[in-house]
Length: 392
Image (tube, rainbow, N blue to C red; front, side, top):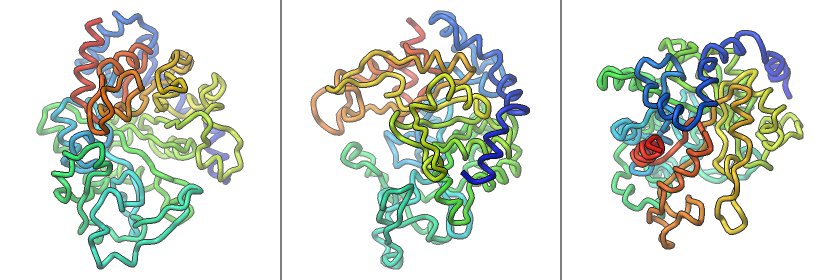
């Protein structure tokens, strides 16, 4: 662990603890309400029910990479459709840097699967193999392109086998920058007459810091430039590396969320720092208390909320929701998708990779655990599922 990270881990009280109380304090009562009371609270939230996170409906429907069930992900086409479909928050975007230090929105720094870069002969020699968080990865990487070069590319559907209809839109949209997203957020807020929320993520921050392309300072600088670095700002920041969230905690006052992968995995900043803890350690009461010192929420995989049996069906829910709520953390698990392969086995219909299963049944099961929101590729489905859930 470098000295900055060590210092950040010691700063688990003070202004962030006060911020957590300010943003979520009244919400703590909401988290423990009965289903009926939670439903009533959800109906009124966002209509004078509070500022910041408290103003969002519960459970919150978060458009995962926009409306990526219907459009190529991390494009303005995907982001705007998510708003059109009713998403409460849009995950715009996953942030990675360019060679010249700009932040752009791509799911990963490797862009061979999400852009048409392979069809650009002028960039053929940029194809290479790098070790990304310990994994050899071959393709084209954003850090090897200037912003001007990336702007000549166009987005394509990442999983065409599951979403063949999305390939209709291949080549239509360019790669957005984070600064463009912040301006777009203001434009859409004015256009729609309601505050648009975004939920960007710092991607592979340790990897990029080693390259001299630190993400957190760049994010903070842009948030300050656009006046969106406050405790009630409509920008929630997230990362799979706790150290990145701790660094952001020192730089801005935005709501912060620690993403959590499978129980036996280790955040890559832990790997680099020889910290032996796994996600399983982070979701213990002790681990959650530590996270609550510098963040307002967690974004666990759905499997951490309800594990799967060997046959792919759902087992009994864990205590993660109640354990997190006890220390004032909200939970925004990921990711609900409509297609069969992404659903628990008992909710699949047939075997077609692009066919929809009983996603409403799955939403109901997850909402019943008391989660505060969910990332979904299909915001319209999520909104209908929420309405069903709130009706009881």
